[in-house]
Amino acid sequence: MNLATESADYIGLANAPILWILAMAVMGVVVVQSLIYMTAVKKNAESAGMSQTEVRSAFRAGGVAAIGPSLSVVLVAIALLPLFGTPPVVVRVGLIGSAATEVASASLAAGTMGANLGDETFTRGVFIVALMAMSLSGAGWMISTLILTPIFKRSSHKLEKVNPALMSIIPGAALLAAFAALTFRELPKSPTHVIAVIVSAVVMSICLLLAKMLKLNWLKEWGLGFSLLIGLVAAYFAHYAGLGLPEA
Amino acid sequence: MSSIITSPSHAAFERTTSRWGSITLFIGFLIATSVPFYLLFVADANIDVGQILKGFLAVFAVYGVFYIVEPLTYFPILGPAGMYQAFMIGNVANKLLPSAIVAQDTIGAKPGTRKGEYAATMAICGAAIIHVASMVIFVGILGTWLVALIPEPITLVAKLYILPAILGGVTVQLIASLKQLKSTLIALGMAALVILVLVRLLPVLAPGDVAIVVFLTILITWFTRSKSVTDKKAGGDGTETVGIN
Image (cartoon, rainbow over all chains, first blue to last red; front, side, top):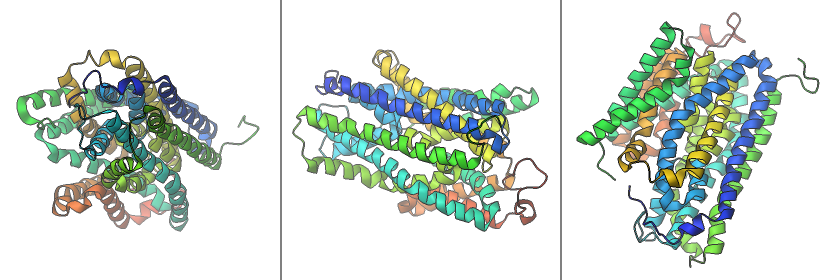
């Protein structure tokens, strides 16, 4: 992807102090929510036969597992900085949505004004329309979650009453299905995508095998980081060997 | 036990997370949405409502379906508490769910059990803290300095191949952690069938592909379950309710 001309005239505006405050406030809200949830788990863990040690292990495992994915998201987010300015990138990529969704949305919205991301047609006006469209779209996900979650909750409680076994089957099956589908969706994209999936899967298998044989529990937590990193290195060589997507 | 005010219970957990989860999500929504409005009012860029509407509709046409489909797909996995976290932070498939899977695998808790749900919640909190720290430090503070430092080819590879490089590993860990051979085979079979065949024949279904796979897998797993194993009330002998088979 190409980046904006250095001196796009809206960048100063996009880095306004008020926007920095809003961006930090958004990150603050995520932290507050997490603290409330952690307290709720700690207080009630006993009722699920979960010890405080297990509560802490789960927190640590989740954090460690998120390091690799977070750093790769950072890499992509940084590439967007010259285009959108820092606070908008923190808000858009840091909240609902991912770097990929946001770039696609911005490019769609810019298209309606006959402009392209990253060249001289991407003016102040286009920038604001694009950011507005991205934000409203993100809001769509949030609002529909606020409306739908209580409805889903009521119906799942009802289902649970009809047949308690249902709730012991659905989450596992849904999780397997979701990840099988997400993974298969990557395969037709290019040979490099196939290589990234396979290398990552093989590295994880090796990590889990070693973790089991040598009783290295930490390897279960770090496995995802290794798989991601080695998968990306393999993708790097495959991509520049000409097996990748033509640069979009 | 030591707590005098309220005794530990799942109901208390659900009450707290539903109330505060939705309040924090709503506040996040307000602040995030105020960013472009602020720019709109101070920028004096000559934009009218029609242009904004047109821009939004172009995005809505592509992503609108997902506002409904994604919550529907992830609810059975995340439960009500996790929904408010996931749809605030985003990055569900590439960050939050992988973290939950790793944590459940690490402490040996199964999805669909309370312990599994609590483990997932703690894991998502851990992931959220790392997420915020990485955004604030590496994007917010060091970003403009790093952008000149990282070679373009590396950024490009990260952008194109993050998702496959995460999904391969996570899917393996998930399969290893759940140990449900039959559901695994059903899920892989349905995914191959829907993604590689059905969506090719009927491209209209593409936005709902994951949801279709999830729905079919649940359906088939449910109707082929061995009732003697799963339909016992409050799993007598085991300490945890194992999903299926």
